[in-house]
Length: 318
Image (tube, rainbow, N blue to C red; front, side):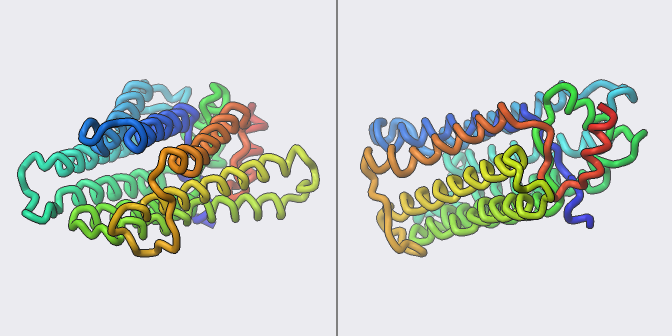
């Protein structure tokens, strides 16, 4: 089924970049919440870090895959140029958000409303959708033994760069969750609808819930599910997604403590140093540590929605 077809290959370099950005954002959030004086630094710095991360990915991809060789399947074709152009468009979207935050063009009215921030976020979401859609034309993983895509995947496996793959369904769930969250949050910020700031976090929960369910089904449907070596990685992944869900919930409750925020706020985590360090930052530190440990110890073993014959094909060629 095409929904379960591998669509995006996630390398260890990209995964490590995401972890690095998350770690820096966490340190910055903690500093803003607990230690820095008013007006010394704000959320503007978070956008700059994201911009740097996107540009780093853009340049490393451009420089790393410029070879034209049929032997390793890294030919620089139209698909590559289009994908990297979409990453650059994402950087432009983040830059527009930064300009909107700084009110560089003085477009904010007397109520501090400005649509430019929303435009930047929408451009990022469109670019992300494009990066998930373009590989559908030329899948990065295929059973064809003589295809360049298969050689590319094998090269990543042998070099240790291969981390995991995302199927079409994975990409759909991730994009819908991130797009709804960021678009709603950007809309509420752009039009200063403070009371709804916590509501978009509800849609982020789609990712950990989906990840938990897929790993549970993968573990339950494998014929060797009662073997520890087989079931332990799935259990570990389910634990990661559970912590991820807790992180999202606690951030939502932390936002609920902002004066004026009320939508979907059954309770709140007050803005104190102890609450911020223990209940908000603590689970995130645990999540980053668990992901990092999994990244170091993981092997070439995509989840159950990847065609097992594809995996066997690469293993046999290895």
